[in-house]
Image (cartoon, rainbow, N blue to C red; front, side, top):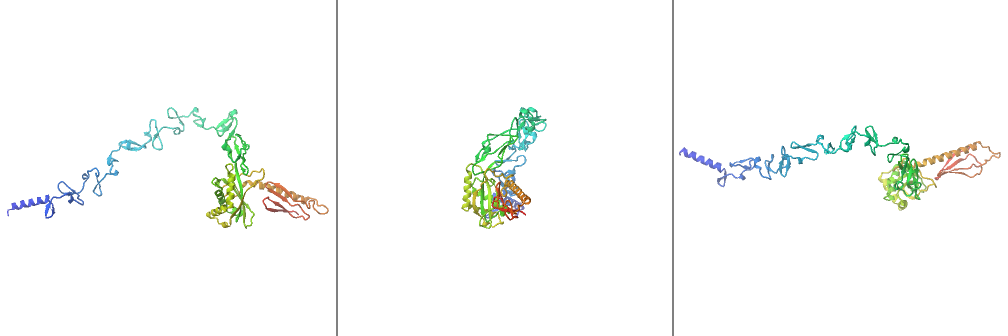
Length: 480
């Protein structure tokens, strides 16, 4: 066979393989896109399969070639870098001034933080929020401590700049008026309230200044400087405090209040228990507030004092406490609520529950009972003492009674000393009997207690017996 014929045949066969490289159904056919898969998913123009390139991603919805999957995907914000850093409606674009926040400045096709040098004109100050603002008085200090109303610039302070509330010019600044500035004899007193120099000091009394359940007493519409007035509480309430006071500089102060004083008799607990465990007092206060009604808070209960009580149980206590009353007629409601809570056992139940909740183990909680409650009575004309320094929940003392008890003790000692002197130095009659034999006891009424001295009998040497007015007695010195 001619070699020329063979070469021509081979050439035609190879050309046929190149044009129709796919053998299918006993015949060759041209390559189609579906034949391109895997790493070469794209059919090139020359009929070959190849890898996907960026130019293949040319549709609006899938314009980006993913570097990992080598697939075309939608554009995202992270695709926008360099000179087109802003992603907007699926397209990356260059930054413009409106892209900068209020704290930034657009410069060289980019946004940067604002600095003081950017603030000029009517807004020369860079504020703490990194925005430019107008200058205010607080921006001016030191030698240029005043903001000029016209130029809006800071300048040195002059005396005409000093007006209330800082009317006094001192070298480079203005200050408030003080007492030493009142040098005019016609206005030599300093009113602390108005910060002015006046001829005389007084405090104006408004209705709210003497708001309490009762009457104004000797408190009028004004109170002279250095003077004090005392309101009057409604019947049944005890006045507490010194009243309303106007200082020498015109400052009105008050520590006055009207308080309901109640005494609760309890069994299963004693004065010693209250003194030993402050939780008993703290819980007592919260229980009183709980059963007294919504208007009473813990802060309005004070002066909790436990004393020995009288009952058939092994332990008893009489607990006195005070409730500050703010409005007229309120005492009747609170008193009724307390009495009802004691009578129906509510107080006992709540007190026990609170003691257990506070893990009180110093006493047998289940043995406690609130037996009876009554309003405490004061001596006629006597004002219960105010708790100096204030009583806080958990306190166990009424310091106002200390002075009274001290006075009683002094008087008792004085009487005892006089009797000792009398019996030591007197002349005994010839018949050997005392001149006071058979005399009746001597009573000296002092404050809230009585001092009782037993008169000498025919048999000398018996002790003096005193009573403190609260049901207890004690023996004094023996007479020889």
